[in-house]
Amino acid sequence: MDLIDLRSDTVTKPTPEMREAMAGAEVGDDVYGEDPTVNRLEERSAEIVGKEAALFVPTGLMGNMIGLKVHTEHGQEVICDSRSHIQNYELSMLAWFSGCLTRAIPTSDGILDWASVQREYRPAGLHWASTGVIEVENTHNVGGGTVYPQARLDEICDGAHALGLPVHMDGARIFNAATALGTPVGAIAAKLDTVMFCLSKGLGAPVGSILVGPRKLIEKGRTYRKRLGGGMRQAGILAAAGLIALEKMPQRLGEDHANAQRLAQRLAKMPGIRIDPSSVQTNIVIFDVAATPYDAAAFSAKMKERGVLMSAFGPTLVRIVTHYDVPRAACETAAEKIEEMLKAA
Image 1 (cartoon, rainbow, N blue to C red):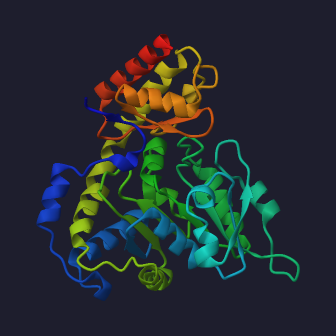
Image 2 (cartoon, rainbow, N blue to C red):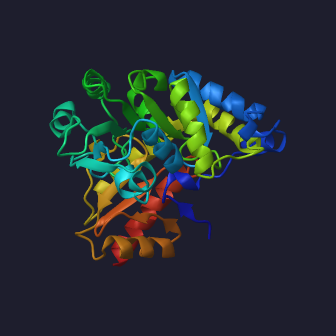
């Protein structure tokens, strides 16, 4: 039985073109700055996002941690959403590596606003930790793939900069955000100080993320990458796939969004499932199964028996993520199998 894997867009396999590029990649020692393919990837990434420089890192977690580290000092706070990836899924690396704590703000959809951020801002003082950086996540994973309205993002950046604060974006899926908004990535990132984005999610590369920002901070980040064990050698083999992911894969992300919307519409009609299709903005669909006979874990387990993989995302929430390895026909099959499972309950 062929599995339909909707657990995450991290499960994508490299395309044949990526594999061919990897096999023929020109390489050198990247720690010495001598890998021409890595250099091309970093230069092109900086150009697309509109920043001075870029750093190729193995993972998004490493990219986020370096991005936050270059802006902060030990003992400071990082303002973020309460359900952000850095708060919940990065192993407390912010404390472990940067010596910082989060000041987390609850939101309904993962999207911060300047008024809430400003209330939590702490200047330097004798009785509290000062704010070092503001972190935003776009698209927001736990929020259901939600996208920052550009005006709201720009307002946060303008307010932060007026206070002398930088803004870092966990843009793991920023290309999904750009597709949803119909705007270039560079326009989204224009007022941000640093941005991390993943090559290995919707863009389909087998591994790797990029941190972009001012050249001085990126060079500082290169030292942190080495300290974290991210100093790869002939990494051009990986960067070759990343270049194809960067240049060619964003153009097809709209297909994933359309498939997610189709799944949401079908799910909304199924007995016991709660979801508002209008809330699905990109390629992430989160739905509530509390009114079915199953909790989220049992629901996912039952679907695995039927050849469809998805993720329990809390006691009653289930997440599915569309990507290029699951075309429309497979999404329709997945929906049919959910319907069959519920009828058999």
